Image (cartoon, rainbow, N blue to C red; front, side):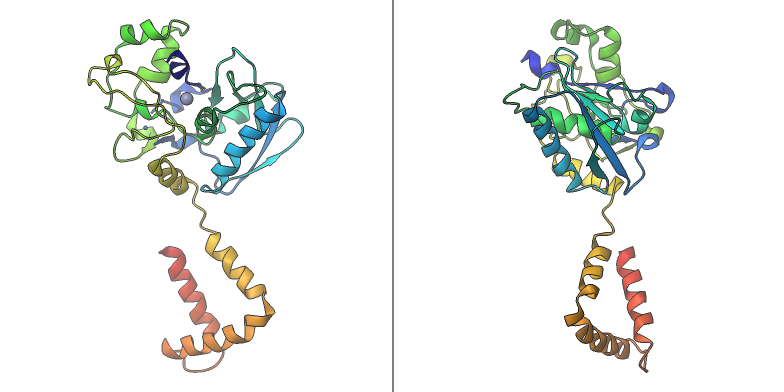
Amino acid sequence: MLKDYSECTVKTLKPDNSKIARAIGTRSKYWQEGRTISVSFMGGTQPQIDLVKQGISQLMGFINLRFVYVVDHGDIRISFVEGGGSWSYLGTDAKYVPKSSPTMNFGWLHPSTPTDIGTVKHELTHMIGANHEHQFPNGITFILEEIKKDLQHWTDQDIINNIIRQSDPSKVDTTEDLDLNSIMLYAFPARWNKEGISTKVNTDWSQEDRKFWSNIYPKKDKYKEALQRVYADKNIVDLLKSTHTAVANILGASYEGREQEVIKNIKHEISKA
Ligand SMILES: [Zn+2]
């Protein structure tokens, strides 16, 4: 069980803006939507690197950020120092870390057969601006003395920063309720808090996690890309032209030539929906 409590710690550079919060994201630490973020590895075995890449590829499946791999000095620099804990800087704080230092570490991924994809996904979600689920505003009241019994290798400050401290609701975006399936939730026993809430180990993004983060980084260009592919196909251009004309007629553009304008308006309406 101890390993469950060795959940990651999150590092922040500017404490004023980074109150730890719920799916919770710190608004001031989000990356620019649609941005390409470069990733480099500082050491690590091929299986470890492959596991992280697997997590990144899944993350890109539902958010509008792109990750590319570079040999050195990426925006995100990932190390695998055993005994160094698993942690990540919060969102764009990574920008202010010296290029010679990692912005994320995996301290317990097995070198030859790593399986802990849950920790990978947890740290990657810190990287895009996520706080711990158990630290939502006006939420769980944790008991330091009880936590200390289990986390003897943590300082009081670590426990306060990563478990006890609740967020300032004015600085974070949150979901409606505590999400017990969130990848950002620690696994802990009921005696850790006054409410008697116990949690399990989560190893994947919950439905709420996915919904929340795809709202923060929406893939709204999906429709546009699909249309571009359609328009690039010469075989269906004629068909589209006649369709445009028909649509234009239905919508009251009575002469040839106005259909483009009508289609544009329709696209605009769809993009707002
Ligand atoms: Zn964490």
